[in-house]
Amino acid sequence: MSHSPGLLQRLFKLQEHGTTVRTEVIAGFTTFLTMVYIVFVNPQILGVAGMDTQAVFVTTCLIAAAGSILMGVVANLPVALAPAMGLNAFFAFVVVGAMGYSWQIGMGAIFWGALGLLILTLLRVRYWMIANIPLSLRVGITAGIGLFIAMMGLKNAGIIVPNPDTIVAVGHLTSHSVLLGALGFFIIAILASRQIHAAVLISMVVTTAIGWMIGDVKFTGLFSLPPAVGSIVGQADLKGALNVSMAGIIFSFMLVNLFDSSGTLIGVTDKAGLTDEKGTFPRMKQALFVDSVSSVGGAFVGTSSVTAYIESSSGVAIGGRTGLMAVVTGLLFLLVMFLSPLAAMVPGYAAAGALIYVGVLMSASLARVRWDDLTEAVPAFVTAVMMPFSFSITEGIALGFIAWCVMKLGTGRWRETSPCVALVALLFVLKIVFIDAH
Image (cartoon, rainbow, N blue to C red; front, side, top):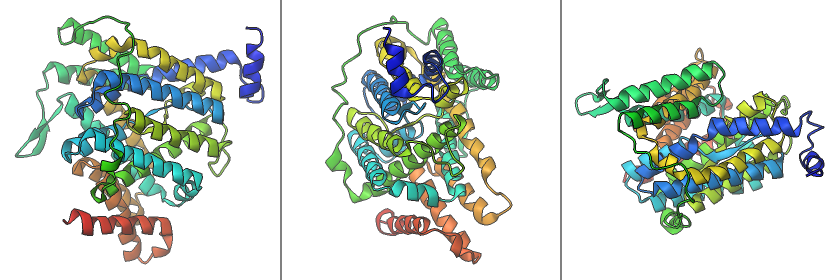
């Protein structure tokens, strides 16, 4: 093993980044603890769409491992990847649940959206789009997805229930699921505010353990060989998804992934001190390429769009500066595959707290909107509230872009609208007129 520090030193340029193998390994482990919740939450969400949860558990581990290791080796950045929260909920609850498409066609839509993102990345259009979409719309999209995810968490815990008279109402506040869902959320919020990085994992362990004590959860062991994944790998219906009625959905997957990933990459590299004043960072091209290739691979193996995880900043906070951190995180995801009985134990309410907490984090970006300028505030507000209220990420994005153009035109400030925003708004208007109207 005497050569390995030398090899790692050369491969990841540790000295240049002022870090050591030990620091990177600890940072990788920390990042893993903050984001491993996805391997328990993702199967539950995709299970709603009728997918085999045990198989989704394995593919979630595999794609998180492959994406993170690729990011570490190809881009040498301290950024781990995994299936995106928000897009998985959109896929399961809206595309499959509310709109009635099969999960195979939904996966096909994710595939085409990811392929579109890869093409935009290779043609360098992605940079142009990131630069030209105004901050208030970007913030509105992030916050709207956060509110949408929080709503799913509140529903899964039974904190809110459907009501024909008032649309929604408060559920039975003394039921197991409500009490434990709320407990899980407050455990995360309190631990996170005390800077404890594994807050989400600790909360899921505590609520699952209480669920086991009161008889809601059956313990079936710790370790087993990974379950078979044949039922979901390669099952995406690519032809079925190439339908005019799916255009808006494919575009949504692409657009959300575009901002989600790009924003996270800029955020994490900024925290690591790697970005310049324009928000660009070294090896940006490689990073964006890895993240779009991972998404295409994710749809193929049967999991939702893959994105860079903001949780990577927990590893950066304790000194992670290179791709070695991401590689360590990826290797740990491979090991988790042997813990599938644990994943099967996690009850819906144990994951609900994590969903509500993600909503808190994503809604925080609304603070960046210039609320005193209505031409900025109205589009951000419309985008954010229409996602949960219309139960669709696509409609939120569409109405937000249209609202931006209407406000800027109506106030004589149309010069502030970039061709990119005008084009997207026009496409959405055409979709509403020619597709939705029929």
